[in-house]
Length: 318
Image 1 (tube, helix red, strand yellow):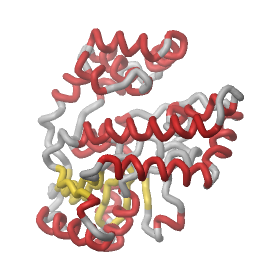
Image 2 (image 1 turned 180 degrees about the horizontal axis):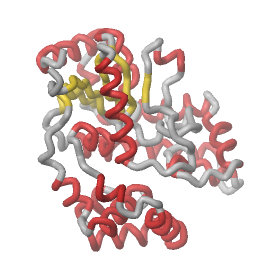
Image 3 (image 1 turned 180 degrees about the vertical axis):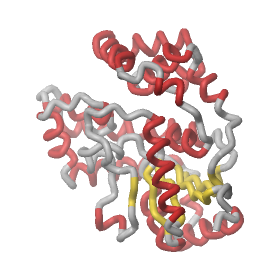
Image 4 (image 1 turned 90 degrees about the horizontal axis):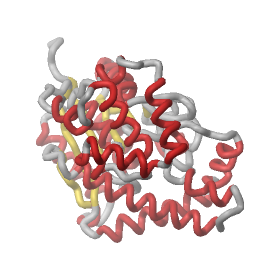
């Protein structure tokens, strides 16, 4: 039937929770293809720092929405939703199961809930407003813009740290373009009907220290695999785009300038990643549709796959 909703399996969760491996395993199980929902993996470069899956790790499973934009390119949530919808429709049209995998909650919810960003992305589409706000953030500091956002929209400001300049600029941009708070803008779209027949799986750990241990270990592995050299090359090319807000790049800049030891910078990456994981979990816990799987309840990966298969079966997306 032409109006039948497209089945979509969603795998969400915090950084270092194993989303990539699970997405690949389930894609092989169901004949699917992965659509990334990661706001930093869309940019070319910083492959190690943003934990992009390697060719070996993907095990032949096609991955989409990775390395599709230049580092200095403007890339909005609306851009992501438009392109991801096209990929999902294409995957479904070829008889494959689209599997959305990632930890950027705004991307995931904007896509599956059919959020309409048209007003915010067509008014002033020359980017002049975003450029002005970004320049203000650089000149005055993220804390100043965060304070401005808190006066306009305290609910959004509460969920966005002063360090996340991209999100702050985005919220202020929507306010200036539409006259609506970002929180109200999202609420106004909350009643929109999804284009998808969903099965949502969330990954977490009952023991938070287990997750934090995985994060700490992964940062060490990334450093061993060349993250520092990769980030140095980007730094020497004077990256100024959104991609350079990625955790793992900005924390290394003091080391490149000779102002800090490498291990101190790596510790800041570990801390920033743990804080990011906490914010991710706060976002995803709001979604009642997510079927949570606590990974430390299981003895091995095969058991995790089996519980996922049962969850998919109950959802009737297949």
